[in-house]
Amino acid sequence: MEITILHKDERKVNFLLEGVDVAFANALRRTMLTRLPSMAIDEVLILENTSVMYDEMLAHRLGLVPLTTVLEDYNLPEECDCEGKGCSLCQCTLTLEIEAEDDDKIVYSRDLSSQDPKVVPASGDIPLVKLAPRQRLIIETYAKLGKGVDNAKFQPVATVSYKYVPLVTVDKSKCDQCGDCVEVCAKNILKLEDDTIVTQNTLDCSLCEACVEECESGAITIDTKKNSFLFKIESTGALPPEEIVEKAAELLMERIQVALDFANSL
Image (cartoon, rainbow, N blue to C red):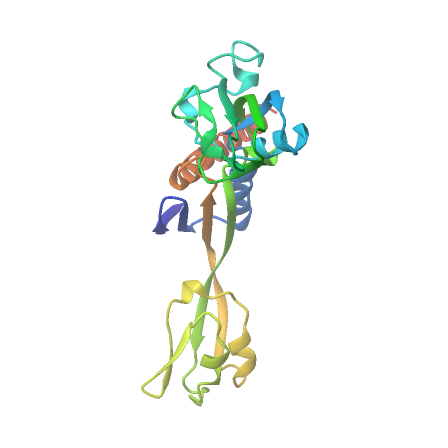
């Protein structure tokens, strides 16, 4: 298995995965979605809420705020010595106390105060509720590690997708170089250069085959590279994208090893 990073920034990573079949690629994707833990608010204690928003709706919004996560600092509740009752090793407290004065006030995720500076909202610009003058909120919340298989709020990825690696070939003996295929290609994979159709940025091809339908039969062929996949991952901000890939691969290999050990014991 080989991984080649094509693009990476603070929230996104695109990489080429080679040497695996589609079953492994899909298992890796599902691991990122359902098995990789991240922090999220799981319990909300509303001490005072004079806003127009119901307590349940406010609690729901708080639970969907992505929190930055350091996996080494916290235990999963079911694996903690406290047996999930809540301690500093498996739980983090975030509080909110705010009141609107003479004007309306929008409460944002950045207004949450965390007992752990490493566990804070991944974005401070998420609106929670709008307070009218003299309305007040006093809230105490408890965040914990969880997995997407239990609740989508624990998913560290906003988007994770993969596709086959495209192979676009132009047969110059059958192509009349009219340029019609260039016009219909939404991804600008084809271009007319010196009266010749050439390919560019083929990894961006969406495999729509619009160019194949536009040209003479066999002039352009689109195929896929065997056992190669293009992954696109966008993090919620809970974990860095490269850590998502690394930890998900480790978890998947551990699960495969468990399955192999079980099979060998039969």
